[in-house]
Image 1 (tube, rainbow, N blue to C red):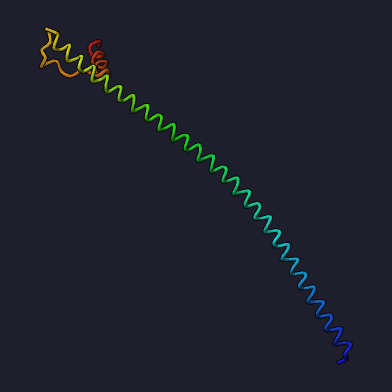
Image 2: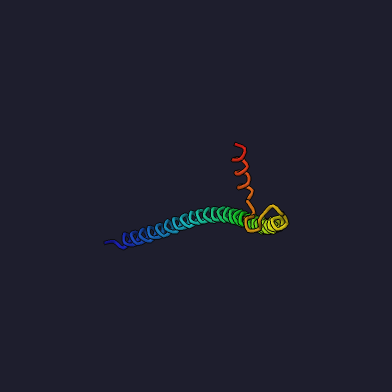
Length: 125
């Protein structure tokens, strides 16, 4: 084989290898840029979802606070109702003791509002 031909083949091989390396680098650079864009999209989606989760968490905490306030109000109302019930029962007992027409032993417990209303309906029929 001729020396000139050998040199041409070696130069051609070096050029081909150099072209392959350059093409490989270009493809890697393009792939990395695509990954950067995709990562940016993922970050944006994560930011949006994070903001949505924060808003939902705040709404849930607000609802829980309203529920606690409502429960506290209901408990307070139940306490007041219990106090009123005891006061009414005491007055009923005092009335039974004072009324000369009522035997204290037969006076019975204080009727509830729903019981007196039903009893009153029966008498009207």
